[in-house]
Structures are given as structure tokens and as C-alpha cells.
Image 1: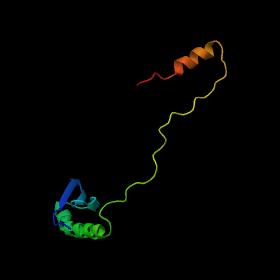
Image 2: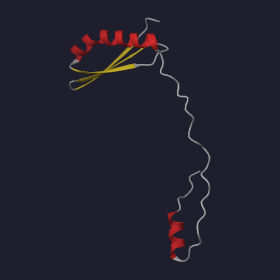
Image 3: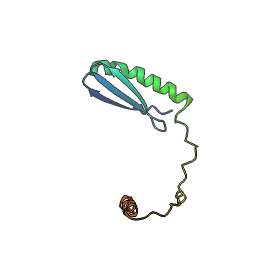
Image 4: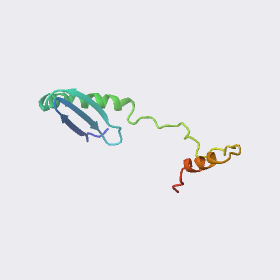
Length: 98
């Protein structure tokens, strides 16, 4: 494994979000309560934990489940309607966008 790492720190009030990433590996994210100094002190531990995770699995498994059907739903049959109900149905019909 390469020694190249990217560590990103985002601070908001007293909360920090830390992301650790290496080439060819999924990023690992951590949360922490504290200021910048507390976050910087925790970074080596976060890096070690990320490296430990990457030893067993560098990337999350690829999703193998089938995609939902892209076919158009079957046309529904409607009974004949009369008068104002036909006008109301026509008004409720959504305009085609494409």
C-alpha cells in the first residue's frame, strides 16, 4: 500500500468531521467533539484505523443487485366516463416533459 494519504478536516463550532483517503481505497470518515487541537491529536489514530480497515477491504463491495425495471407500466383500462368527469380527468393529466 502506498504511503500517500489525504486527510480532510471540517470544523463547525465544537464538532469535527475527519476524512482519510488513500489511492485505490474508499475514504473513511470519523466524527469528533472538540476543537482543532483535539482533532489534530486524534488524526494519527484515525489514520491507523483507516489503514486497518483497508487491510481487509480497500473498496466497498460493488452493488450486484438488479436495477429497477425501466419498462413503461402497462396501460390501465378505464371505464367510459361522461360529462364533467371527463373534463376533470383531462385537467389532471400531466403534460409530457419529453
